[in-house]
Every structure is written in C-alpha cells, then in structure tokens.
Length: 340
Ligand code: NAI
Image (tube, rainbow, N blue to C red; front, side):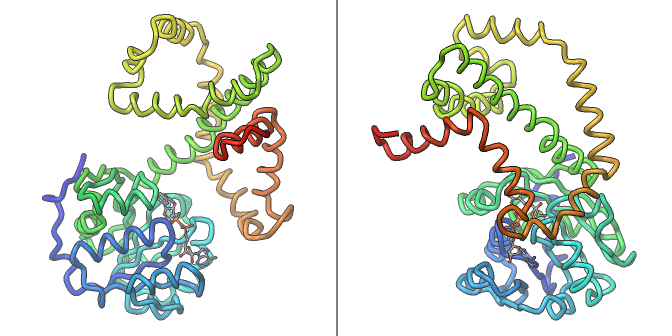
C-alpha cells in the first residue's frame, strides 16, 4: 500500500511538542521540512550534545536543548536521528526513563527496533518513517516541492493511533507527496542489511577482480579506471534502469553489448550465489548475528587510528590494485594535472 498527502490528517499534530534527537543528515533535513510544513517553531525542540550539529541547529533558528532527559520529558513525539549504533546507549539511558507514557517514538531505520535494542513502554507508539534518500536530498526535494520515497510502519501501537500519527509525520517531512510505502522494520532491515552485506560486497569484489584480470592482460590503469567507473557510465546505466527497466535499458547499448550481456547472464549459474545470499540473509542478518557482532565493536568506532576497526577495513581495501590505481588517477581527474 502506498499512502499520499490525502491519507494524512495534520490535526493530529496540533499542539504537540516534537523533539528531534540529532541534527545530522536526517535530523537537519526532517526538522526543517517539518517546520516549513507549518509546525510552529516553538513546538519544535532539537536536542543535541554540544557540537557543530547543535551550532548548526541554533544558526537555523531552532530551540536547542543539550540535556536529552529534559527534552524527553516534554516530548509528545520524538524522532531518533542519531547514528543507529549509538541509539541504544543514548535512548535507553538518557531518553526512555523521562519519556511520557503516551509518547510517540519515531525511527528512521528499522535496525534497533527489529533487533529489540531499544526499551519502550508498552503504552508508547513506535513508528518507522524511513526515507529512502540521503538527508541532503530529503531537504532539496522538499524545497523543490517534490516528495521522496519513504517506508512507513507501526511497530508498537500503544495509543491505537500509531498509523495516523506516522502518516501525519510522513506528510510534514515531505514523504507522502511522492508516496510513503507501507513496510515494517523487519522488511527494512532485511533489504537494507542484505544490500549492504551481500549485494554490494559482491559488486566491490566483482570490480576489484575484474580490474586485476584486465590489468594482467595488459590494460592500463588509467584506461581501466575510466572504462569501469570514472566515466560514470555505471551511474548512467542505473539511472536508465530506474526509468526504463533493469533489462530494457540495454536497448541503449550497442548490439554487440546487448548480445554479450543478455547471453552472458544466461550462461552464469546463479545457484551458488543464491545459496550464499540466503545464508547471509538468514544466518547473518535476520538471526541477529551481525547485530551482536556490530554491537560488540560499537564503542571502538569512535576511536582513532588502528583502534577503530573501520579504519583497519579501509586500510585493507586500499591495498588492492584497483584502489592503488584509482588514488593516482582520481587526482589526475580532479586536478587535471599531467603529473601523476
Ligand atoms: P548522523 O550521522 O548524521 O547523526 C549525526 C547526529 O547524531 C548529530 O546530531 C550528532 O550530534 C549526533 N550524535 C552522533 N554521535 C552521538 C553520540 N555518541 N551521542 C549523542 N549524539 C550523537 O545520522 P544520520 O545519518 O542522519 O542517521 C540518523 C538515522 O537516520 C539513523 O537511524 C539512520 O539509519 C537513518 N537514516 C539515515 C539516512 C542517511 O542518509 N544518512 C537515510 C535514511 C535513514
């Protein structure tokens, strides 16, 4: 089911105090959209630790409260828009104990709800309003008078009016203009984490190995970088696929290319990759294995240097032939220098 503006009743938000926990990518975009949709500024509070994001909120005229518990006490509706990995710590310790019994908690991702990492009272509403768009586009599309795709769901209906509130909120942040798609935290987590842990890692490896095989066959680094992605051809192909269809976009390619791709895809046996994909989905994503592993390193992600596992992963990937070549030719591409 897809919900549009006409499905949303803005009366439900009248006189409600709306708190944004976080003013980052999504927080800044959604808070501004909501205010521009007519929610009075005095009914909006941005609660943020003292950092550059808080300064940004102040500079945009928002009321900023640094004490999360104080903001939580007055919240009728609270958007959780700080990074997923810090939400359980911050929410459970500094927000949940002060929240009203009938408060509405809004998440922009299903992660912490699906894996039951947040502590709610049964009387509270928990809704998911999850834009399928980066924050800057959530804002720029709204400013252009357009909507953006979004998933909406009720994960806990403490008050009995969770869906109506979720739709009203989807409308004021600008989502129902394009259509908010009925979903669930489970569906959002399955698709998101599967794409991140199964689909895109395969694409990274496909490009990395293709690069090495062609380099070994005598292709130059600069030709490979441009041919494979720096020309932005893959980006164009995906844009065409979104407009014309995943396979039908092939009609824009040469006949040699069309035949090669269509025939080549049929020659590949998908059963091994399908089995691997299923294994990742069921035995890594949906059973919570990844979540437990990620929770155990969460605090290390704020450390510097090699103590941060993310830095080590970047370092490991920077060793591939593709990454080494790219470093040199990206410089050439952006600076136009002849000296690489
Ligand atoms: P972000 O990384 O931009 O968050 C920054 C905000 O979190 C700032 O206000 C900062 O002060 C605060 N913050 C960071 N660490 C903190 C800590 N340790 N304690 C207290 N506050 C802290 O977050 P982003 O990307 O906007 O994500 C927010 C939510 O939106 C997440 O649930 C995410 O999954 C979801 N989402 C994000 C999208 C995106 O484009 N980035 C797209 C769709 C959903």
